[in-house]
Structure formats: structure tokens, C-alpha cells
Image (cartoon, rainbow, N blue to C red):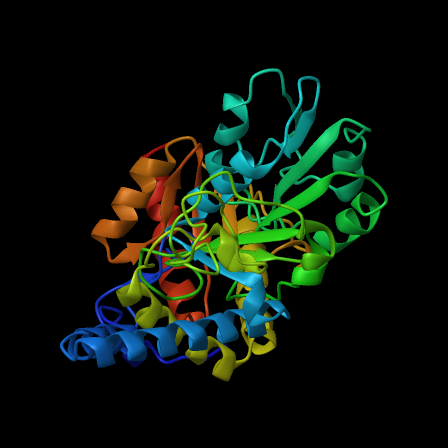
Length: 376
């Protein structure tokens, strides 16, 4: 029996529902709720509070760096993953005739910024009904005018996991940069910054935190010359100097992409949740979700459902998706029974994390066939 790695008692609300919704957002982690109170207490200390905020920020950068196998100076903290991707879109020096390579399993935040680039072609690699794309398929669309390849580590739609390291090994032989969206993987399976040029992630899904932060991490080997198109007081090394009305002196590290104060409440909350994830061990969490997900795939298939997510462990993470035309209605019906998952885009998606266990799957598998039949 697969038991939770972080107990349900560590979260608010899990005593009254089955939470298979982490691909959308995680349940409130009690440690993060306590950290928000710490933020308010520290803010009441005035100048001393600002010093304490800075300490928490430095601690979080170090923890995220540990998750990614990078260094604290490689980490920028923005407001959300979409802002991170748009910051890269603004920073890249596009010329007419350049192209961007994406795939048809990509979330809109990885697509929309490029539609604003006049004269730049967006090449879409189709999944062709298999619900996954390979490194080879992505590379087939890369040429000498490719400026950037954008891909999610784990698809929000199908739950398929991309072999991003294999893709990056080939991209390093070209001039194209690689932006990896780890929103659906960071915190539940290992993510390696050395396997991409830029890694972005949101804060409120698998990282067990709250809204308000976007993580943008840079592999310095090919991004040192990448400069932001905007500037704020947090992106420069010196604020008050003789030439401050004449020149911009960006930080040499990732902070050059930050503009003003970050969401300190979110920083406090995420520091506590990431610490808990690292204590549990990302490798242990990965083994846990792959075991539960494997069971779910097998039993859903046996019940006659069309599972979109690959069964092979190395080709998936925590998201398990099932084709269902009326997915939103099915998710609503399950929610009324206390089982929370995502429904939409012609499918339902159950997201398995460190706090889930076999009892959660038992409840889903008990209800799903009966409720699905009422909607067919």
C-alpha cells in the first residue's frame, strides 16, 4: 500500500475531500499558512522586518537552486510563470524570418507571447494523436533561423514527460536557446537546470505554495548575454550614482530580470513548502507518484477508459489524463462527491502528489465509472 509521504494532516481541508487537483493548484500547506503569519509579524518590525524579508528571500533562492541543481544567483523571482516567459520574449533580439519551435501539447502561456512577434514564424510540432512528442520531433523543425525552442517538461494536457535532456544535447549544437516550462514537474520529479538554458515554473501547483511567484532560472553557459528589455530598481547593481540618469548597470546574475519588490508573503510561504519537499526527497516523491500513477493507469484502462498518459514511468510524472468529451461536467460531478480533479479540453486529469495514497485512488475508482456512465 502506498502511503502519503507528507501527511494529510499537514494540509488544510484534506480531512473532507480527495485532492487530485495539484496540476491546477495544491491544497493549502499548513506550514505555508504559518509562514504568512511570520511575514506579517516581521513586517511590523519596520526596518528590521525588511532585513528579515531579505533573509527569507535569500533562503528561498538557495532552496530553489537545490531543487534545480543550480546556484542561488541563477534564480530570478517574478510574479508568475507567464510573466517569466514574456520577459524572455521581450529580451530575445528577434529578426524578421526567425522562428520559434513549440508543440501542440503546450499550455497557452508558452504560445501566446510568440504570436505577438511580427515577422517571426511559430512552428508547431503536432503530437499526431499519440498525446506526446519526442526530442526528435522537436529537432526536425529546428534550423539555422530558430531563435528559441519552448517545451513543457510535463504536458498539462496529457501528462506526458518530455526527455528534455536529450533535446538540449542536440540544441546545444545550434544557436537556438531552450526554454523549459517546469510548472507541471518542479516539486514532484527531478528537474535539472543544466538540461536547459532557461527553466520557468509557477508557485502554487506541485511546489505546494501560494500564488504570487514565478521562478525563472538561468543556465549561465549560454544566457549570460541575454539582457531584459525593461529595468527597475531591483535589476540594477547601483541605485544612486553619478550617472544614474544616463546609463543602466544591470546585475550580472539573474536578478537583472527583476523589477521591484517581489511578493514577500509568497516567498515566506514557498520557503516553507520547498523545505518540506526537499526534506521528503524529490526522488522519493517521484517514486511515490509513479507507483500510484501506474496503478491508476492500469485500473482506468481495465475499466475501459482511454488513458492519454503513457504508462512507462520515465514518460510521465504526477498528471494522469483520460479522454472524456464532457470532462468539465464529470469533474463537477466528482467534486460534489468530494473528489477534486481537473476537467476540460475533452478530458479529465487526476494529479497525484506526495500527500496522496491508495485510499484516494480507491475513492476515485469507486465513483468514476458510475458518474461517467451518467454523462455518456
